[in-house]
Amino acid sequence: MMRRFSKQAVTLSQTIYQTILADLISPLWTAYCQRVPQALRIHQLLEGHNKRVVHDHIGLRTLNFPWSSSSALGEKLGQYGYCIRDRASDPEQHLEYFWFHHPAPEVPAILITELDIEALTKSSQMILRELASTTCHSTLWSLNQTPACKPALQPFEALLSESEIAAWFSLFGTSAHYFSVSVNQLDRQNDMSKLIKLLLEEGFTLDSQDRLIRKSDQTLLAQAITLPDQLEVNLGDQEKVRVSTGCYHFTLRSKSPSGKLYKKFFSSTAFSGTQCD
Image 1 (cartoon, rainbow, N blue to C red):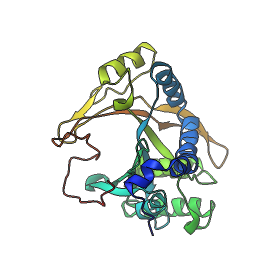
Image 2: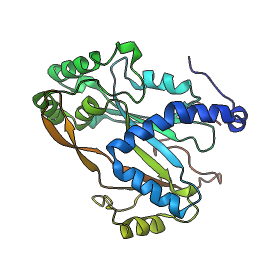
Image 3: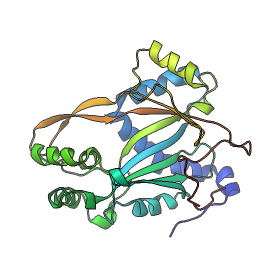
Image 4: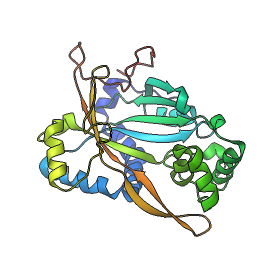
């Protein structure tokens, strides 16, 4: 059962905030920076130019096995006061997206991207089940958990040929896929043009495949993303593979007609999630 916190209680209780930071956010951030070293360098760069750097949200990837599904992870997030605020589907890619919001200021939201395992072949499902079974009993699977054993090269390539998310999960599990900086809460680089100018001047490369700044009038969001870090990973048979381990994201939010910052993530307004505030 999800434990609920009132907005006032969460806002005033430093104990709750420190618990969330120590037990949830910091472990995710530490593991993420080990895989995406540019994130720590950029974070330190921004700290040198701004009074504080706050993350808007964290992206997690998972599969809809009962023990690693969005429902299972959402229940764990609920223990920290999170509740689901928005969701969306991509049937062509067999993906579901779940946006978990926290009522406390400066606690990042969490976006869970869930792949339907039924979209994978039986052999791929078996590979993933075997990897998970070497880690722990399924009911103990948790946030920020990676499989204890990596797949051999051939099974990994088989997963990759079907789904990049499935292959990524086989290496990194439910650890953070990305963190996104809240551009709104930077005091100097508090718009995208200033932020991008600084990043480019410092030698960081941004993903411009779609466009450098990705805007949506419907969602009142603007986002920018670095090119992914590429790291060599040791596989289960002592072979190595070079993979994309993650990017660092930046999110700028606009105000809704009500005058408040837009807090959701998707353009669809059909979903009516549990209200956190």
